[in-house]
Image (cartoon, rainbow, N blue to C red; front, side):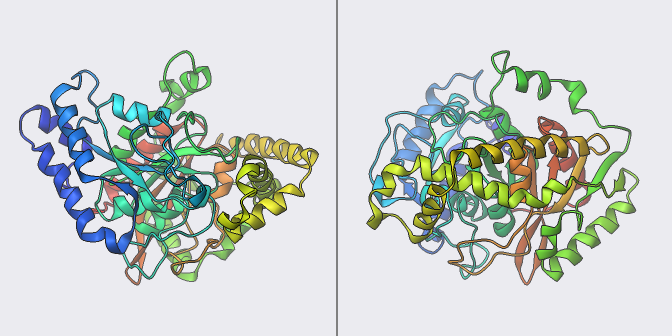
Length: 441
């Protein structure tokens, strides 16, 4: 059923034209067939999945059914009332929190099925886990949200949720060849999930197409007057409009020096794509200037990230034998950073956010590479540098489109929108996919 969006499948079921039970069982069959090699799941129970489905199809209110019977993978850092939440750490093995994260609750509220818990890196940081890339198990699926990306790429679920503090939605999506959407900071509630960094952690998702990204985002996000910043911007139709009849597209290349780390084949693929856009009358391209502070983004982010981790994981750090060397080193570095230095870098993050926001006075969206190229070898902890953390620091919505390939392995095009212009960004993604469609996932 890969030619249908989830929205279409739910509609067909309501019309009596679709077997949701058989559809769910097709994903379970893929898990049975592929999980021993891919290792995408921290927790999976077939009987529980099918019981949840039976209960939802029997009793769920029809007016709250946007995800009716749709299985969703849940990164194992979100609380789940009926499944363990172990956060990729042996310290928390067997822990069941007794409640659902707010975004998990929102999924269930609309009839979604929590299919299981997908593998995450230890405390959603850098330490590689056992998950393999479905395209080729010799390669990494990306780290933190690896299980969610791999589960969608292997057709074990049609969609899954994850988080991004630097690049943990976009990188796994790029490496595994799926759509990955990290919305504007603060649009999806973080209640009931592992916290690593207050000003950076963002809930996001993986899916098989743009409309599925739109659907799951709108199910999970906050709504209403209690959230004035989101309501006054995201829900303001005028704020979501294009600047002119044509899409004004900003090309991110060498103005951001970190992109010099991209592989030659990735640069060639991106340049070729830009050349195609130049010949399309729907788009008007430019190369915007960026503030000089953007060159310090990685240093600013590292300071904020390491200090926050050293604060939030003080208790876990007491049990050194169960902490990975990567995590140990980060926490040790974070302990050396003063509160004053942390505060200065928070101020720099805010300054950079305001300066980058001004770039969008002249463009609707930015486009760049999602990653430096295809996935590194399995077991590599730190990914080659890219621009992902810059957009995360600025709170901007981003989406990976799985458009490129090299030697049978995928890598993506990254679209970047202005903060709270998530609907506009997804509309632009629709326009790109209309001209450059992806078959299946």
